[in-house]
Image 1 (cartoon, rainbow, N blue to C red):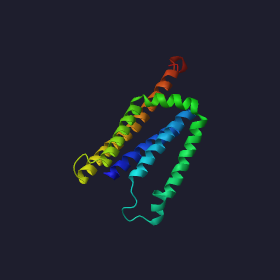
Image 2: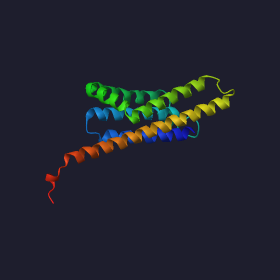
Image 3: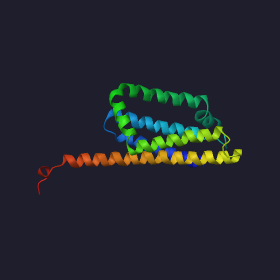
Image 4: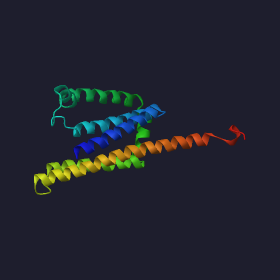
Length: 175
């Protein structure tokens, strides 16, 4: 189940990275890049390289202090750009958060918190049942995150198409 979660999170990160790449405004690029890094951070959290036959270099880069160092550096870079574009970023971020993809992402957040609670509590009687419930909740959270990213990209694509259509007038293209 964790591999499926990682797949959903990587898909969402890729979609948001693409959305950041095609965004026209710098504050939009920053928001979508931050969301992509957020998704990637969750993917790294779920991806366990300690299990399996991974080379030591891969384990050290994808787990532990080295991973935390490069990931923290990426968050600092995003923070720098967020600070530079903070006025427009806050307005756009709140607007995005109130949109359908933002609300879906918030629901996914509730699922992640719920999964953490199930992990800490003994809600289902046995450790195996608790683990199953936690993983099922996390799968749903990861699916919702991927859905949020896809809907966000679709909405931005539709907005761009509507903007382009609104700029066209019949006088521009005589028959």
